[in-house]
Length: 385
Ligand code: GMT
Image 1 (cartoon, protein in one colour):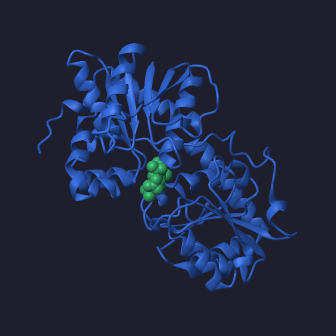
Image 2: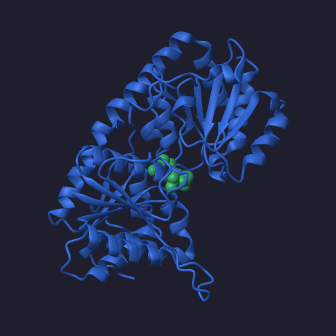
Image 3: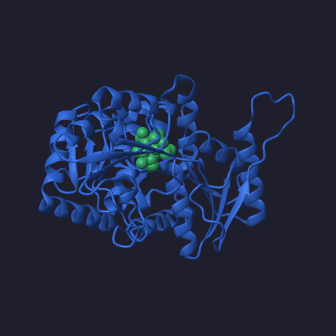
């Protein structure tokens, strides 16, 4: 197949998944064309059968506000014609699904191009529910030939909030490459952060309010009183100062490290002892899966799709949103009991490989593409506005 992939190319789980999907598809013999404003951050320099098409923005002075969605549509149209794409797979509904729809309209009704849209999370739970975006989000989703959601939770949200018929949405969960997240093979950088005997607790996010970074620090502070440990914070975003304030208030500033944005977290997760993700909303929680693949037990909340990823008591622990005492008690008991930690670490790795490994999930995408190309075309469904 010849597949065009569009995603947000900078940081974020949707861009990471879209890029890893492209890499895996190319390994399986498909030709993949990334179409975006920058090269996806997880794309290595050269890989066979992978191409990158940079969307150029018009600099005409009248366009004070940029026209990315239109430039993207124009590039999707051009690449489809030039490269003979069979399918455009867009990640994150807005504006990618809208641009893909414009490109397909430009090609005309007889052109066989098909569009698959993967819903990732905030495109449904936040952005799509802004009053000005609601209708165009729904329209663009419904005009896609295929629609996938990364969790059962996100499917339910899309059905409930956007009145999309449930049979139109296929759940294909996020995935992880077990070979990339292998604590047995990767170098450990623990000595750069920790003193002998200390445990390494990690959080990775974009430091937005939904991530509840104050809860990360509060939970850590309570664990650190009982188990010698340090908190390694990876990523950056608007709530980073909140995390620093909380560390000061909790008196743990000297045990909290801010590493900022990192392209790859595999080597850091490879030596982590515990991962904390206390989000108030999370469609899936890809970083939790990456931690599990690295053999790291995960402390998370019951929010959104997290209970689909973390098996409470087996691969980690789930608590109500904001329940820092519960999370801290669970974290402490896991870290203080070596036998329990080893069992959870092994279970986390096993679950990530057996349920969410690339060899399990990528064939699901391939089969779904085949169904869509064979004519199962959701986009013909009438859109009532
Ligand atoms: O909204 C974000 O946090 C970023 C967004 C993205 O585009 O990367 O993350 C969403 O998609 C990820 C990949 O499918 C999921 O793992 C995250 O759970 C999801 N974020 C939220 O639902 C908040």
